[in-house]
Structures are given as structure tokens and as C-alpha cells.
Amino acid sequence: MIEKRPIGALLAHFILIIGILIVAFPIYYTFVASTLTSPEIMAPPMPLLPGGHFLENYGGAFGGIGTIGGVGVGRLLLNTTIVALTIAIGKIIISILSAYAIVFFSFPGRMLFFWMIFITLMLPVEVRILPTYQVIVDLGLIDTYTGLTLPLIASATATFLFRQFFMTIPDELIEAARIDGAGPVRFFKDILLPLSYTNIAALFVILFIYGWTQYLWPLLITNDNNMNTIIIGLRKMISFVDADTQWNLVMAITILAMVPPIAVVVLMQRWFVKGLVDSEK
Amino acid sequence: MSRRVVFPNRVLPYLLLAPQVAITLVFFFWPAFQAVRQSLYRDDPFGFSSRFVGLANFELVLSDPNYINSLKVTVIFSLSVAVLALVAALLLAVMADRVVRGKRIYQTLLIWPYAVAPAIAGMLWLFLFSPAMGTLAVMLRDTGYDWNPLLNGDQAMAMVVGAAAWKQISYNFLFFLAGLQAIPKSLIEAAAIDGAGPAKRFWTIVFPLLSPTSFFLLVVNTVYAFFDTFGIIHAVTGGGPARATETLVYKVYNDGFVNLNLGASSAQSVILMAIVITLTVIQFKYVERRVHYA
Image (tube, rainbow over all chains, first blue to last red; front, side, top):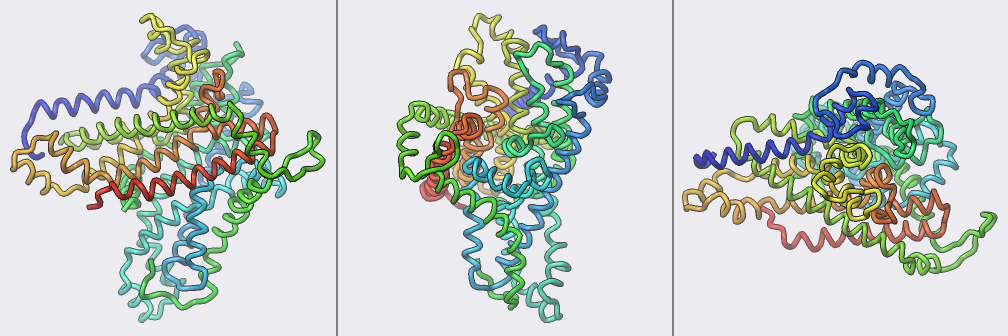
């Protein structure tokens, strides 16, 4: 606080509260809708306080009245969890290894590999949809977890983050380790990895969210409803033309699809924020 | 990026790089190469053979009014999303940096949308603004405004821009707040002693020192608006009404997977690739010069 300006502080709080209302309202609204009955939702204006059908709707979502193409919400949540975890952990492993090679070794082709990884930034799935799909078909990976995750595991961003971090590690540390007789594997395992825990935790949060929120790729790769992620499943449930859409269940499933990633961000907030900030430097 | 001290191993670095490079080659470079190749060929209607047609696919795509429309839509969409999300986030971050009490609570309450999938963000906005069931849609109509995003292209655009920007605010907010907190307090105190008020301090000290953050966020937001918003478009408008929200990425998907037009879709992929590369290069080259690095 530089100077005392009570009106300024009041204004700041006021603007922040307005901001939070705007940010939180769509989620709150959907939560309220998830505690109402379908006819109540379809008769706007909808009440803005939660109704009494919470257990009924969430129970119905899990109970499997053939919720989404004959697949239960449990299965969809499981699929999404597997996909998100595999992508996050896979990206971290292969990126930390690549960054380690690029920063701590000198070998022919080092810059070439660095640029190869860099260029993938410019080739997101969206610009090579069909041919990548073709590769997955040729490899027989349609409707598999491998197909859902493997192509998304390469990560220029994560490699850069680790590279940035590794560059800040003083040469003296490596010299000391080498004088004490540590080889590259030992150095990685006993010194570099423990030093990277914060970065790994931070990256994990971001990549878990990335994996959880995938849309285009699972849309292409899954035909079988059993392999859908929850977001794709939800999209298939929503139809404004179809009068049979059970909006109360849609709302409950929307909330269920949001809770795990939001919980990760809020519970791991410290790592999340610190990681994002550190990685930018 | 070279260090003085490195490990002398010859084989190990290649082994370490192998998984990343293998995935990159199989799922990035090979498909990209295929996209370029297919963009020069055209399949016969039955899909039995394809023949080399040179740049004919590109001519076809670039002379297609739908494609030009989609280009316009994408530019309007991306600019609106980036500007809206950056301005809103900056305002909130400056305010959060000013308050003494409750900073953390505000932060926690502002960051959740980061975790919401774009497609779901779109659905949330649809629940609010759908003419059939949205409470806000009803309120809008009660004020006499003719709200129907299913028929009115501009309104559909406003809705997807709102959803896309809404989702991006938390990300930008966190970065702006971090950028603000990294600015040495002594600078601001010195300016305050010299008699500069909050507004003057913001524009002459804080804002210039934030420019590396803003530059970084501009890149991220543009890429986000270009690519990551496919889910919003697909889940909310399906490119409609009358192609009013058909972005380039949505059109590639639609032409390739729904209309099964391989050559045209590949040509569009290649153009999109060129756009991404140019965008990245221009932003790195041009914006960097105007950025004040502390």
C-alpha cells in the first residue's frame, strides 16, 4: 500500500466482486439448474436458488438410466481421468528427459532436435486433422486409450519450461556432482529431479487440465460410446431439437465434468500459480 | 543456451530424446508432410485414385466465398476474444494488486474457469443465453431486445466470443497479477513521493513494465482463440447460423470429416499452417521491439 485511499480501495473491492460475479455466475447457474427438474429448467426464468432435486439428479446421472448412448457417467469419468493422467504424466516424463538431453549434453544435432521440438508449437492438431487421423487409423488406434493420448504427449511447452529451469542450475553444481563421481543418471535422479519437484507439480496441474479439457482429438478418435470422454458424451446428450433431452441430467453431468479439474486447480493453487509464474521467466 | 559443463556421453542424449522425437515425427511431421502432399492431389469421386493437380486445390479454396467469410470470422473472433480477455483480466489484476485484505480469496474465486473445458464453457453460456431455456435470454427479450442467436449471426458471434473470453480471463488474470507483483515497490513509491497519482503511476510505470507479460499473453490468447476454441464453436453454434461463426479450424474439420473433401481440407490445413507460422514469427519479431524488458 503506497498511500491511503479508502475510496480507491472500496472501488477495487467493488470491481473485483463484480468480476467474480461474472466469472462465477455461469457455473453457479448450472449448479442451480442441476438441482431442479427438467420442466423447471425449461420454463425460464429459472429460480436462482438451488432446488430440492440434488440427490435425485446426481443419483440419476450415476444410476445409468442409459444416460449417454448406453454408457454410464462413471465410465466416462474414468475414461477422462485415464486420458488426463496419461497425458500429464507422459508429457512430463518425455519433456524432462528431452530438456535434460538438450541442456546437459553436447552432441551433434542438438540444435536440430531443439528446433524440431520447437516447430511442433506451430503444428497443433487443428492444422493437420485429417492426416493425423489417418495415421491413427493405419496404426489401428481408433477407440483406444493409446490413440487418445499418445499423439498429445509430445510437448514443446513442457520441454521449454524444464529447459528454462535447468539453465538456471549453476555449473558448479554439476562440477561438484562430477567430482564426487556422479554420472548423468545419478545426477538426474539425485539432484535434478528433487530440484524439479515444484516445477513438476506445477506442470502437472496445467497438463492435467489440458488433458481433461481435450475436445477435438477425442471427438475424432472415438466412435464407440464406451471410449468417450465426459465432455464428448455431454455434447452428444445435448439436443435442442429433441424434446426428450433430460436437462436436469445434462446439468448434473456438466457439473460433474467440471468438478475434478476445478478441484485440482483450487487445491493445488500454490503450485499452479508458482509454476505458471516461474515458467514465464 | 550452451553451458560450460556438460556430460561427455555420446549415446545417452539420443536415448533421452528418442521418445519425444519419435512422437514428433510420427504424429506431427509425417501428418504435416501428408497434408502438404494431399493438398496437391485430388481424389476421384469414388476414392479409388488420386491425381496430381498442382495448386488447383488452393485456387479452389481461396476463390471460395465461404472460405473468405471464414477468414473474416476468424479474425473478428480472435481479436475480440483476445482484447476482451486481456482488458478484463488486466483490470481485475490491477484491482486485486491494490487490495490488502482478501487478495487470495479473490484470486481463488477468479481462477476456476481456467479448469473449465472450452466446450463446457460454451455450453454454460448456451444454458444462460439459449432462447429456449436461458434465463438471461428471457431477461434480454423482456427489455425488448430481439435476442435469438440461433437466427442472428452477430448475436451468435457475441455469444461464442463471450464464452471464449470468459474462459480465458482467469489465465490472463494470474499472469498479470504475477507481473504486477514482480514490479519493484520502490519504483512505485518513488513515483508516489514525486507526486504521481495512481493513474499516472499505472500508465508511466506499471503498464510499460508489464509489457513482457502482455506480449506473452497476446501470443497465448491469439493462439487460444484460433485453435482451442473449436470446442466452443462445435458445441454451441456448429458454425452457424449461416456460417456466421464458422472459424477456419471449424471449417477444416467440417470439410474434412463431414463433407469428406480431402483435397480442399488439406489445402486449408496447409494455409492454416502458414498462418500459424507467420503469426508466430510476426508476433515475435514485431511486438518484441515495442516491448520494454526490465
